[in-house]
Image 1 (cartoon, rainbow, N blue to C red):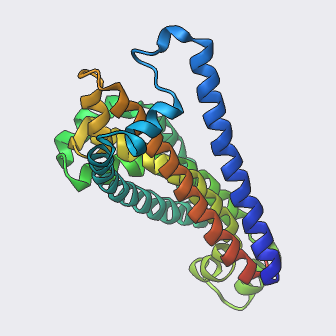
Image 2: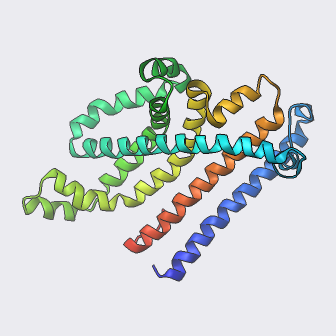
Image 3: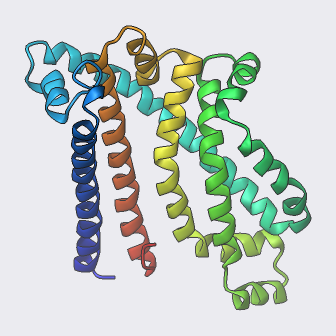
Length: 266
């Protein structure tokens, strides 16, 4: 792909995300209009959130407090994302190289995924505490399972001819994985990353809500009983926009990397 083609693809990708953001705002406004009982006590419109964060008399201090919590949540998102993706890549590689392991442990993994994270939180916090380890475990669980399935699919799609040639020249399973399966799975890796980034943000928020008592997740927990609905809606908006921005960053990197590899983005 040429630079012009990469730029065009990236522009279309970002344009679609902006369109999605606009659609969310429209649906949000229509929802409040359709259910007037929600507001004005509880519900907040996009204009209300804009005033709270930008144009209100106390907007500066309110925005600073939310952004301080956002940096904590972004750090927790990074921890959960990296933990889940690294674990998914490692386990997927083992499952592809050793089929009996996949047949034995994949059902157990899916069974674990079916247990609600909220139900596992007390056990997780009891074992690893309420610090970064809690964030890594809870965020990693949310990221791990969808990424595992997508990465395994990508690894299994390696061209059979290349694998046969490597084996014929005495290559081991690890050599085949490194030289054939992993390069062919790069599009699947990016697809898993794009799906996992919003999941990592959700995992960070949940871990803060139930585990660490820091960041935007803790702010949401404190805002609900205090009836601080302006802060509640503003925090939700910041989390949503941050998830879209992170998704966009991964998508742009995907376009650049796959263009250098001569592969079309997924």
